[in-house]
Length: 401
Image (cartoon, rainbow, N blue to C red):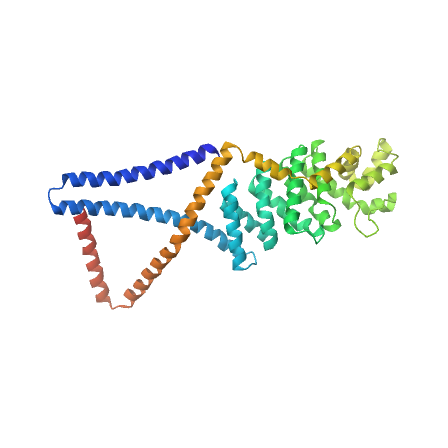
């Protein structure tokens, strides 16, 4: 939502409410000035009360609707996420508090949480990733949907390969900063990064290699001219052919603990195998025979920058790029107006939650009365209906409505 939209909507609501209040006051003043007896004064007051109660009812229903949207999001979340009532309440409150200070609305945060839970994240992972998706979307100039998809896939694929002593929050923080760093450092945008990383997910899950190395390599390949899909496919093919490279080139793929070696260590050994670089037709053909045409591009493009990319990978892990970029974006005037809009909506939700219980009681009472009426004999129902009809006509006539 940009500044213009927020300002026009906010100004429109204020003007509409002001006009309605003026209308009520005008009707009361005019009717009282024209009143010639007590009956006309009473009619004027009754008419004013009617209009005022109608506007109050519309306002209360608007507040209840805002609260109802949040409740609906929470109800959907409960169908896909296993958590206690206290955990659900904490998630909702966290989303509301976050939206009070950032550009992402509470409904967008809850929608993101639903998508994360649908993809298999647990309550701890959802809580850790929800705010980070908001930071990544703002800092990398993407959408909440794109950031949510990227981080959810990363948590599912790479989260399990990280040491178990690292908390879900720390994992989400590192992933968010790595992705933001990649977008900032290389010629790649968030949806492209999402698309490229999706191509890598299968081999990443099978081999358990380092996420930051893969993201940095993806950024470097796209900067060199490959599309994100081509870059992702190149990295995938490279890893899928490591077994063949081990057999034909004697490449040591795993370390002594059985863990796959780092991408840039592997590239270094491959360079040495070819005498320092792949720089002849025969060597190109040989590399393509092992890694495929697309997979060999990982070697030919990255072979001269492997040390620089290794340093980029380490720097990305230890950076706070996402938070810094998001903070800079949210200082803008348009972002501040969006945050103001979030606060107004959250205030409506808070008031609406207070009214929801009252509205439910009224609805239940009406339902109870309806069930009693339906159980009555037909002639009694007809008598009551006739009485209510004439009463409503009389009140309307007296009020002059």
